Image 1 (cartoon, rainbow, N blue to C red):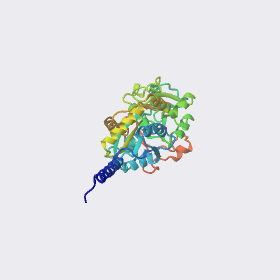
Image 2 (image 1 turned 90 degrees about the vertical axis):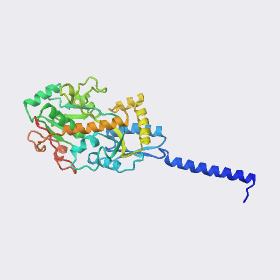
Image 3 (image 1 turned 60 degrees about the horizontal axis):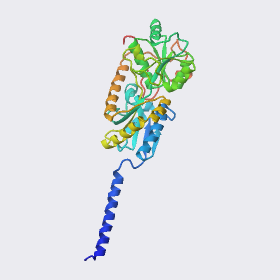
Image 4 (image 1 turned 90 degrees about the horizontal axis):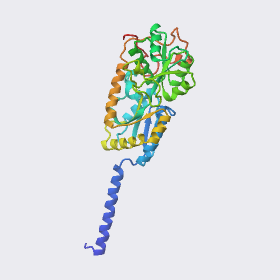
Length: 359
């Protein structure tokens, strides 16, 4: 059949429209992002990680032109959330906002691991640090870390430290190991009841995140002695570091974004670029500081190297061999919270141990 000139032009125009539509549809299917991104968190709503992620996540969605939703999958020391993300599609629509709990401490706190913190994830961007500090009951006659160590060495086994997170566990174990102290470890399910017992004098000391502990320090219910980072915290510039007295002490509670393993490089680059822009904004930095976070970022490669370094550092922190049971210790009268938190009774958790001097 021979087309007339007008018919020919119409056919060409129709073909062009169809072709353009097909190209547009294909682009829509491959363009990233084109739907909601889920940010999975290993902690409950209201936690420090949750409050900072809600701020960054909202800005990330705006920058990418899509919605972001937060999925709090708390439980099992963060391993539920970590396993979920590790088994998700590496398409950039399921991201993991986590801390050293899942990627540094869990390999040494859990009997079995349902994920590999290195092989099962793609590092995207580190977003900052959540500083911890050493606080003691104000009745203890020590105004510095050096004075506290001297007291603890005079009476081995008398002093105790509480923990309500893996960062607190690692910090306490590292302090005892590096300072050569015999400290009793009293673990809790969360930080608030642990702080309650330190304030009441049932437990001697605790390593606590700044946002949670600072109000009690300001109220004179606790005494802060030092921060756990090697450099002084910009949030507490007058507070010494643990490393000033206990050389080699450098515990960082970090926060960062990861995805499942084998994410496409272009998606990782896009996410990293936007996250870094957000974190470096002065207004965002100030808002994160108000939430107790020192915000900064870097490349995916820098984050990957940092993750491996932190995993090795925590291995050293748990490199001890002897321990003793905590509940029923004759020198302690603990709250019900501590009494019910028996060593080894939490599913998947190891028996709680702490280093003796010279181990």
